[in-house]
Length: 375
Length: 254
Image 1 (cartoon, one colour):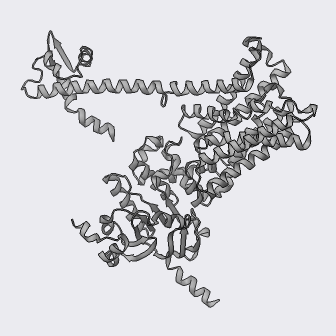
Image 2 (cartoon, each protein chain N blue to C red; image 1 turned 180 degrees about the horizontal axis):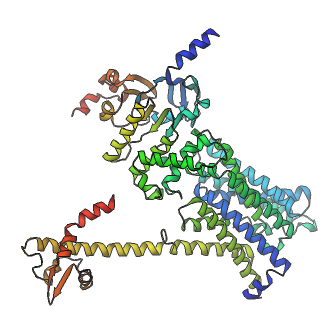
Image 3 (cartoon, rainbow over the protein chains, first blue to last red; image 1 turned 135 degrees about the vertical axis):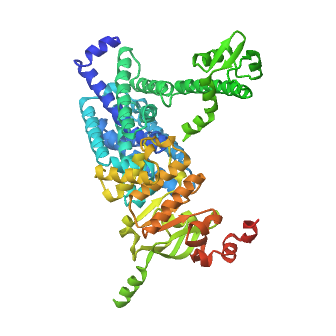
């Protein structure tokens, strides 16, 4: 199947439609919530939560013996939440910094989860196979009920976000100030964190424990490059996330045997790289172009002011001077001189240059204008 | 009953009353047994060396930090019931100015407290925010992304956000830190204006030279409260030496 076939089949083929819809919704909700995580500088929290969910999946299987995804994800949710609150406890009750706390919980829970997985694999139960799909995810196992669950959670998440938009924004920007206005910051905080945990748990089946945090961070990091408004950032992150899901699924479906989760993550990363280079205001490319332009302008101004200082000493400001004397000044090239001519600041006659009235005026006001532009 | 009445009457004379306030981060107390009464309508500086607990005192009064012991009352009632009367200007460095928002939005945040949960700011709140921006001379910058503002402009935005709250008591944490002379004068003029309107302003301040010029009330703090009162009565060598541990007169008049 090639990409074209995929897009013609996506609306008619049940499996393809389910998986595509699932990954799109997942990308949208993680992108949206990921914006909050990124702005709170809790980028690593997602990584810790997803790893902390692994033992929950294993324990849920051991206790119930069922491989139904909802049961396992409930286990993941509980252990993800426990992990999160331990992290918060460690940060507030000890001297450890948050990165240390995150790292500790991440490896502790993941280690315990792996231990349980190997234990389960050694059991004579024929039902045990396939739990390891939660490590890297397997989008092909998505069924309609999974997608419904994702859609419902996403819906609730959107409603809550719209309701508490003002409070979320306030807390993200200035938590102390939020407290003094009389808002219960703990409640807002728990609300945001709970939804982040929920989104991560929903994605485990598709993207897996190991790569899940990229779903949270990549769309948000890409979106931040394009806008200076929180609402637009959240919206853009949701769109980037959804497109990563759809494109990732399309690529993995059209190239046999490519695992969907990693492909989605790579597509999301492409969005990030593209944004970091090509964003008009924050992108590397345009920043470099602006930098070069500024430097050129400055050189031009320097040459002009050098000419001004020479012309100043003469009664006639347009008295011609040899181009040679400009060599004392290093910023001068033929090109910059030509530019000054184009701007009508200077006229050139053979090897002599002379300042025009306009050029003299501009040079005299050069620093004043800079000052004005500054204010 | 009678005693209670008398007590509450006595304390209403003060805008802020702090009783036995003690704060400790780990084992060592940062503030020790602070009793402080701030009369209504004063412009007060809190001065003291680094680590004296000046910011901590403000944060503990505002409930941002939980004290080990002590109580705070605003106009005779517990702070929690009087929140709407109190506005806070945090240190400029306490937030990430690369946050995706514009100046007007930050000032609008000052209206969130009176709006309460869920309700969105409307035309009335926007008008109040624009007026506050005008007062601090930042109206031309209302749509500017906040990371594109200079340090002094960011400080003015924070001040405008507090002005929008239309409070009776203002707590400010080092509003003059890292701002140029123009902004410093602009800010102090606004503070003096607030005092004229009968509001109480409490400022954590570092520059001792300007205390007599800017403020009429002062509190010396160094873990314990050293002294509090009118600047003209208590701003003297004795208290400065007690607070800073050096003979300050010598270093000032150099």
